[in-house]
Image (cartoon, rainbow, N blue to C red; front, side, top):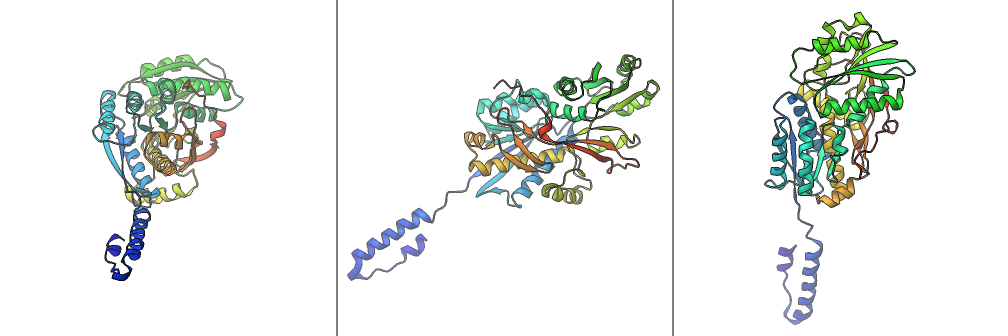
Length: 411
């Protein structure tokens, strides 16, 4: 516009009036023809890409990038602002995760961060978000303390919490029956928080089911026989139904427990949901039930309808557990930036508290009190004739409104 107006020729006799008009027009052009300059919004994605949870981290990254692609229609823009994603590997080390987030917010000038895979690393990162006063979207770490006693106002979590997992698992326990449960859990914040949450969930919705024994082990444990024998001993004389339930991440011990023949004591195994490669080893156990955060065949909505064939085309497999999680984190980010109109932390927090947004699972809502995404969970059963990628049949959707997740952050 300025080039056009600068080329005007003003007749000599009307120069004063013409000059005034031209000046007014030039002023109008300056006001109305110059939109706000587009900004670069930097997003840091931190994941445990090295170590036992590498598969989880890879899925999260794939899902996050595909979510941004779908939600921005391939432009990688929110409004006029361009999204740039920096991906970093915390190697499942809390000190490294903390340092990487400091690097993201400080050296890289990231506006927002997303991560991470392991709960101990996520917990180490939380104070950094508060120190730098920048939003951190936690995905997929699940320890309750992330949105509980360790929480701060810059933390939002799209990933499910241990308590949400626990209510899904509790819903899969038969109602009205006396059930004795032994727990085999990972010896981490994830595992211990998970057992505590499961106890609360059982008390709330399955009061006749009780945890009678607990075992904890490191993720690299090779020999589960001592733990199994202690659980068998605690359960074998109990009346009613007997179950060993698992809260585990990484290489799953279910097959090793199966080899020890718990059925000789009338003990069933309840492994909980996991990624497809882990659950493929369970396909021989038709009828086994559990609760899960996501299984590609369950939700029916536009995002999941796009994700299923597109992920299959690109990666030769259905979208898995943590793919949906990464996509959901992208959905929260785009919805938050759109509503806020800015990457400014205070504007983002105001926009995201109470925000409802669509994901491959359906609608999630950030609870205002602790920024935990409230979301549906699923009750599943292993199919008869299950295959590696066609494993589960839907039993029930457990609506978010029926998951009485307590608020524990003492806000």
